[in-house]
Length: 337
Image (cartoon, rainbow, N blue to C red; front, side):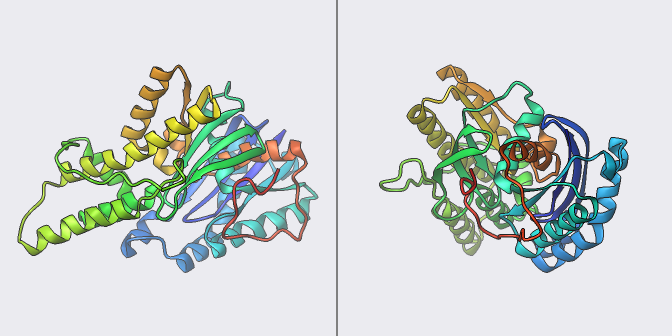
């Protein structure tokens, strides 16, 4: 079964053709990073306009690279939640138009579910149940994946997402957007024990995260040093901050795996590309006898192949939509069954 996946939840316009949820026939991504870099972050209105300009060409390119036409497509899957509402609407309305014109089934896909499904593309043998840490610029969740479309969120951030904390810290250190990627690179040459940062926890909710205080701590440290005319060693600062964030992520993931009895641990989302996080979780899984799965780097960020992958399993479950489908800026990952 061939599914055309469409993704436009933030600042990447993407289209892909995926066969049977596992084989990627094409995966085209048009990034807006260079334009948003001028503003230090994503400007929603600009993102929406660029999606409108790019989505038709990106989709055509995905079909051509896959060696097929719309006649060869069995269904159309689209990210409809969560994300920037204007950006989502571009993808949803485009997908609805294609579905109406071709008579193909329309599959609504949750953005976080598709990030999890990116692992099915990299790891053909991966099947639920498993525990997944979804960590990105806008989300930090621990999800008990019981089946392809049956998920339960068992831990979440109460304030900032880990990726947002990385980006804000990097910006304070003078790094360009997107900051998290640059911080990860700079941290490789730094001393992770040079600075001591807090490891926040949430009282009464041991599997939840909190990164706001950690972000504030590094910003205050930089500000105080600046007022005193001091220059901080950026590689050491980046390495120490990265270690603190990863410590929190790994600690809660290990606790969640033990609580749920998981035998497989999976990571997903943009921050799953972080080198220290991948290495630390792999080490913890080895020590505890758990299998560890991670997506290829090209599937960590937003893309449409992951939408096509999850769309396949949503189709099998019967989760289809009609022309009444609308975009939704916020939606829990376990809303649909």
